Amino acid sequence: MLRLLRTTDRDKEAEILALRHQITALEHQLGKDKIRFTCP
Image 1 (cartoon, one colour):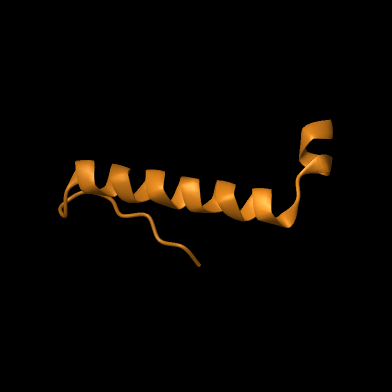
Image 2: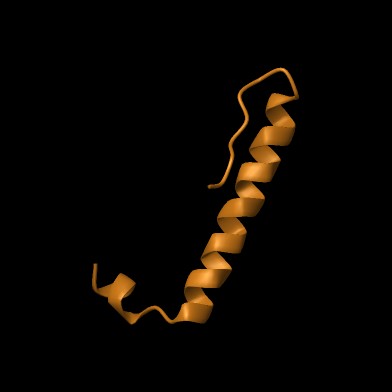
């Protein structure tokens, strides 16, 4: 929990980009006929 308090905005943005990349990779593996993740 302390780690979360020490993260900078740049660290948070980098983590968000990494997570978005992982979601994209999972969507690719699932294919078009499977469930799709969307961001609000």
